Length: 140
Image 1 (cartoon, one colour):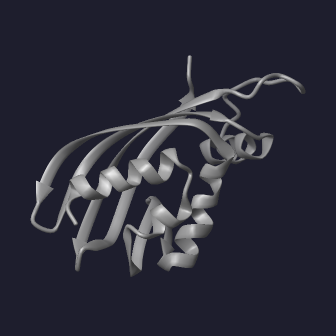
Image 2 (image 1 turned 120 degrees about the vertical axis):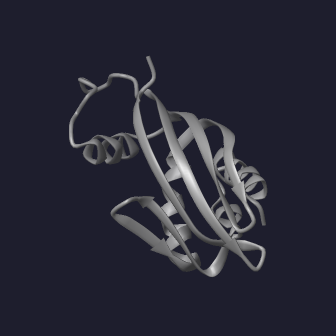
């Protein structure tokens, strides 16, 4: 696996909201650091984490490979999606540490934009470890 292969798979897994595609990118003991302070290990934790993307609709993922090496790489990614549930919006609002969007009951849910960097390391044709650093906000 190369960073190009991984990012094509990552894009497909996110846009199709498919936890099986996501977990198939990783070795059995693979790790995904969705923040510097949280890590999912192995297929069960990876699949459980990926359930949150099922609350997103009209997902668009773009990326640019920034660096390639023999066993890894770095990519810049950009995602937009329509928040499909109040639950997902509340997860986002809590994760930002603030309630940036002043919403009233019944207001439409926002379209979100996420921008981030992914660093991945590969062995045996699969991802051993992926780390992402990202920020999100409602799309203007």
